Image 1: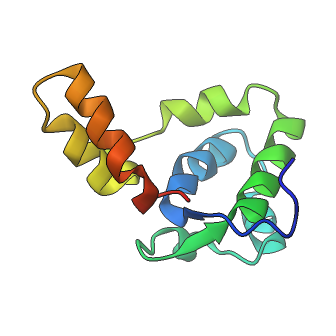
Image 2 (image 1 turned 90 degrees about the horizontal axis):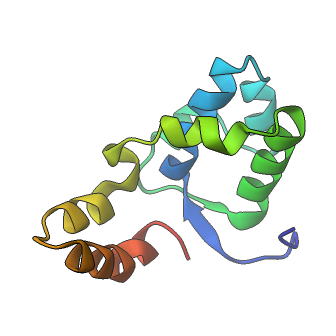
Length: 111
């Protein structure tokens, strides 16, 4: 579990696949987001970063409700959620190059 005082942050857009999965499972998405001070509209803001604590709280609550939640969310991951990191990786001619570039630019999405 991530401590509430954690200073790390993650791009809000990375939560979009989880929101889609929660909708699919009829979980109380808006209430969950509100519990950490977010709205659906906030997740569309490419500049917004969310604390690790908030993201962790959302994930843990969802997994408690549905243990396979992460697998379902992974099915909803789209290239747009990873923004420039996905583009930089996809533009590489080899898997090694793709992983190196993804690793290099990942800090743009996640501390």
